[in-house]
Length: 461
Ligand code: NAP
Image (cartoon, helix red, strand yellow):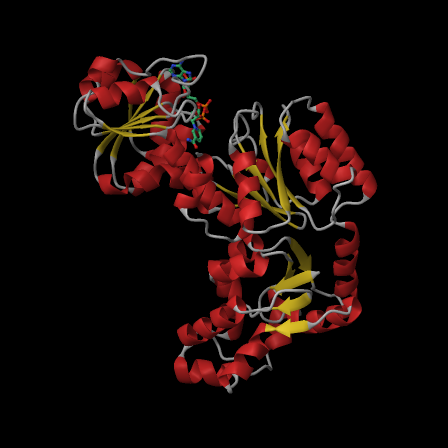
C-alpha cells in the first residue's frame, strides 16, 4: 500500500502522515526531511542561500528517487507544481489531498520558520498561492479530505476507511451499477464497469472517470484514457454514461465519488449552472467539457478551445470563417480571438450565428456568404461530414489555395471537406488534432500529469 499526502503548508500532511504510517504499520517518508538530510541544511537555509528554483531541483531529485514499496509519503506544499513529480508520485499509489481553510492554515503556520514564498503578508500569500495552486492540487489527487476543525486521528480514520472500503459503500455501488445497466448501451466498458463496481474486480483503490453524453457511444475517450491510466500505472477506470439527463449522471458520479467527467453533446452548456466553480475560459465560452470532483465540490473547465488554438498558433491576425454556432463554434471563436483573428461566424440558422458573433464582438453572415469572404482560415464546427451527412459544409469549388482548413469532425479522419481542401491546394488540419490537444489538457485536469501530444497520437493509431 502506497499512500501519498499532498496539500498546502499547514494542512496536516506531516502529522497525519506519521500517525497513518503507525496505524497502517508501513514506513513514513517525508520528502522535505529527505531534502534537508541530503543537502545538510534546512529548507529555510536553502531558500535563503540558493533560492526557490534550487530547492525545487533538490525536491525533484528526492521525489524521482523514492524507493518503491509500501509507504506513507508526505510531500512539500509545492511538490505538485512539477508535473514530473506528479507522474512519479502517482505510480501505483493513492493520492490524498489534505485541505484546510485559509484561516486554519494561517493559524497553523504563523509561528513556523519556513521562509515566505512571496513578498506578501502571510494571509495574502496563503490566499494568492492557494488560488494559483488549487486546480493543480485537485488534479493531482485521487481524493480530497478537509482537515479543518478535525483532530489528526479523525483524519486518519477517514483515510483508513476509504483505503478499506473505497469512496462508496456497497449499496451506493449497487445503485450506480443498476443505473449503468439501465442505460442499455453496449460498449466494452459497461460490463467491465459493473464488474469493477460490484463484481470480482472490485478494488477500493480504483478511481472512476467517465464521459457524459447522449449519444456518446462513438467517443474515443474511454479507450484513450484507459490506455493512459495503464501507461502511468494509475489504478483508475474510465466508463461511459449515455443518458438523456445530466442531473442524474452527476448525481451518480457523486454517489460513486468519481474523480472526473468528460462532457459532450448535448450537455456542455446545460451543465454550466450545475457546477460549483467554473473557470474563466469555460465561463466566457459558455460551455464546460471537463468536470473534476473534489469531495462534494465540482470544478468545470473547457479544454476544447485549447484543442482548436494549438494547431493555429502560426496564423495570428488571419481572416477566419467559423462554420456553425454551437458549443464547438463558441470554443473556436474564443480560441481565434485569443490569436487576434478577424472572425466571421457563418451559420445555417442566421439568428443563432448573429447571437454568437455578438457575444464575442465579431461578424456574422449566412453560410452562403462563404464564397464572398475568401478567408485565410476556415473552421468547420458543424457535424456536416460525419455520418450520416457525408458532404462538405461549403461548395468544394469555393475552396482556394492558400486557405487553411480545419475540420473539427474527427470521424472519419479524412472528411469530404478535408479531401476537397487538399485537392484545391489548401493546408488541412484534421479534427483528431483538436481531439488530441483537448484530451491532453483534460488528462492534466483529471490527474495533474502532463502527457505529451505524441503519446496520445500514438495511442490513437
Ligand atoms: P452543436 O452545438 O449541436 O452545434 C452544431 C452546429 O452545426 C449548429 O450551429 C448547427 O446549425 C450546425 N449544423 C448542424 N447540422 C447542419 C447542417 N446539416 N448544415 C449546416 N449546419 C449544420 O454541436 P457542437 O457541440 O458545436 O459540435 C459540432 C461538431 O464539432 C461535432 O459534430 C463534432 O464533430 C465536432 N467536435 C469535435 C471535437 C474534436 O475533439 N475534434 C470536439 C467537439 C466537437 P443550426 O444552428 O442551424 O442548428
